[in-house]
Length: 297
Image (cartoon, rainbow, N blue to C red; front, side):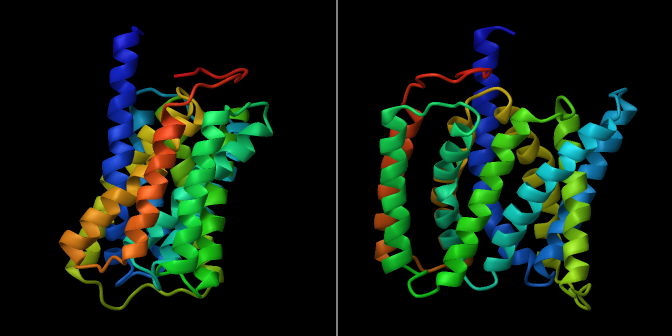
């Protein structure tokens, strides 16, 4: 693959994770108006994973091996269930824009977990991470999450789970290409339905048209398109670039939440967002000192 073609793919994939995933926070808010959180997550990823899996198999792609299914199940637990599922639950209590802003801690966890596999983070990256952490602290002590430590903890837990799964997936047996994304979504969706049953969630008696539309958006764009793009990025760029969407998503979520849902943004949240964006710039313009066994972009 030529360098120009590679960069076009990277830009396209990042655009998907930036814009589509930034909008999914509002879509989740609309979906959980009718669906319980883990019912929604289970439905979203089971349908998306099944559609992509059947399509790939019909095109001649090989089915995952048993050990690859095991890896897909572990990543499915960490990303769609503990990551996305926890965020969906917290959005019962906080706005979509605040949830997206809090999840910006993911690159901090990404750097920590990457170091467990020999990834040496540059000083500029650490500075960006530290500045991003300051923005999150501002949000938790002066913004909408002030005093709501349970929601803050759950959002940090979701970011850590997502980051661990993202990094770990590069070091375990996993189906190649889009089959990896399909198997992870399918496993994650089925595990989410098990969680839903364990938590006693029930299928909703009344489902609004807006919730159905949100589910369709999450399945097609949020999962099949954006999740597949993210899976590709994880295996073609360094983890900090792949996870950069967690910095940009809050900006998109802010705009979408204010324009389409009339969400109120506190002044401190704008300040926290500005601080986090400074961290983004430092992380994305940093050079990597040493990253064994990875392709660096």
